[in-house]
Structure formats: C-alpha cells, structure tokens
Image (cartoon, rainbow, N blue to C red; front, side, top):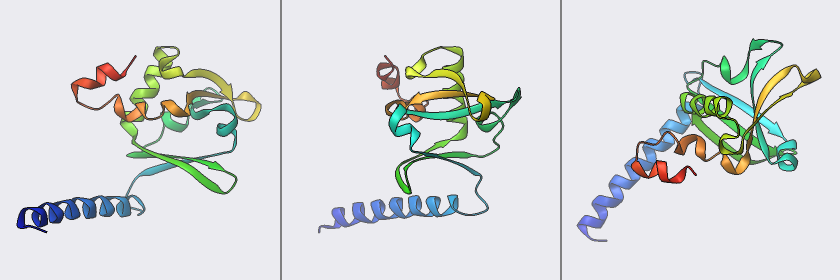
Length: 145
C-alpha cells in the first residue's frame, strides 16, 4: 500500500469510526430516538403505517419530540428492514402525503383499535424517498416523478 493509499485508508477508517460512534450514541439515553416496530402485516399489504392522530388528538409522528425516527419491519421475531430518518425529514414527507393525495403512492386511512386512528400508508418501496426528497442536490428533482 502506497503512502497516498494509506492516507486514504486512514481517512476512510476515521469516517467509518465516526459513523459507528454516532450509531452507538443513538442507542443511549442521551439520544432522542422514537422506535416503531411493525409486525407481519406490512409484508402482506406492502405498506408501512404512520399514525398521526388518535381519537381526534395528535399522536404518533405528529407529537414525537425525537430527533430520529426508527421504523423496523419484522416478520415474526426477525427484523427484515430498519429505516432511520431525521424526524423533521419524515414529518416533511408525511405532510406531503396529507396535502398531496397519493404522494409517493401513499394513502390516508383509519386504523388501529376500532379505527380510532388516522394513519398514512406508505408503500415499503417508497420509503427511500423520505430521505432522498430532503437531499440538497439538484438531481433530487429528477428522481421525483
């Protein structure tokens, strides 16, 4: 490994270690992370569920004070996918789903016990858009059909 290769490796290693420290921080009491785990139904419906109102009052994503939102999709006891977003990015995306019917294939409906909750259904394949719609690069507009 040449000197330049070694310097690049050291920088990449430091960058990776910084990411590991950030992930470790997310697992502490100091981090504000809301975790929502969905079991099984998402695999049949193809949708992730985001609650924003229950019994006429804001709930779920609408009231969280977390800095990050973690959404885990499980089949039985096995996590199949985990998504982690800045809460402000997720809220911005979900506001679009409410104000622009059908945004990213989303749908508004009622759910939960006695259909007392208002929820947004987002197709699992569209979940990548939550972060990508807030990215600051020009190609973002091209990726939103």
